[in-house]
Length: 171
Image (tube, rainbow, N blue to C red; front, side):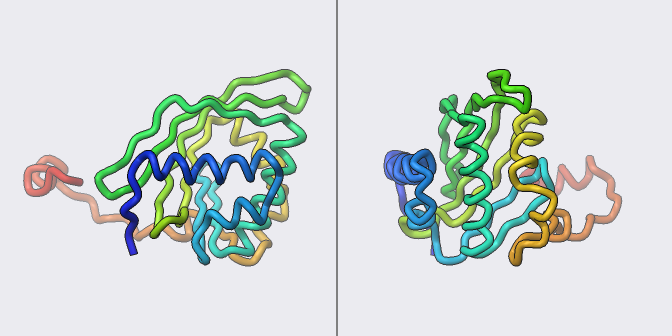
């Protein structure tokens, strides 16, 4: 089922979701998600699927965000033709030496009905390094967590790119 949420409704749901995150309310955060959410962290090569795997992701991420005092400021919100919300933000946090740092991320959020179905978070290298520290070396052992590259489709064969573009400019 797709979503019919407007940008205002998506932002309202996101505000509820983020309020729960900043209050370290994992159950409140999860209440904004579908029953089988999917999260991806391409900079870290992680694919997280299922409520329990996402719960453990939040346990680690929210704790880390509290320790490092994460704060984000929206730069852009936009809706894609497919109904996804794209959020670009600056993120502020204390690095491993306690120095206040500015990073950035983009997240693409998919919705189903009136809930968040998926998030794909693209982080700059400094923020990704910090998040990786909180996920820890055992993150891939959590049931439902796998390498994102294991989910990729097989590569397309080599092709004449000019001809392929002429035949299908919507690639």
